[in-house]
Image 1 (cartoon, one colour):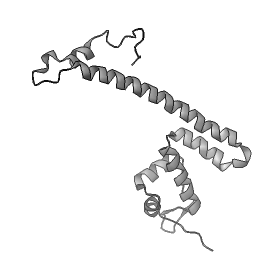
Image 2: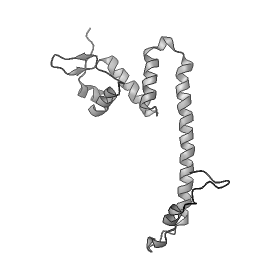
Image 3: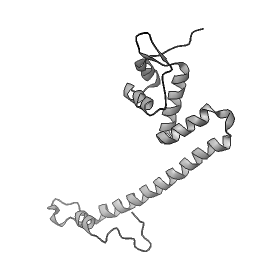
Image 4: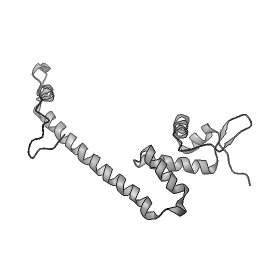
Length: 149
């Protein structure tokens, strides 16, 4: 039984991505066509397609290309690694995301504060409280009890 082989455009369509993204992943060493046609076209196997899905799904849940490469190493050598090692990657990513959420909450609080200071009227922005606050060198200095933004 012959397995399906895909040209780059066919695999991109099958996976719901672009040819450019596929080429980028190849340039980053995340996927690689194992075969070539007689006319030199890259040919991707079902295994290559699964690897592409792995990369795309890992990217969608927030893993960086470096982290995806590390996860692919675990994927390729499953018998040499434990579930605990694999789970550690998601735990680390959750902590990273939580820290980003906290940073975004601080930014949102600061933006809300700026937004509320402004009257938003039709007058000239010469006396705009938002613009004055942003140029104030002391505005973002850490004050007791206020978020560090």
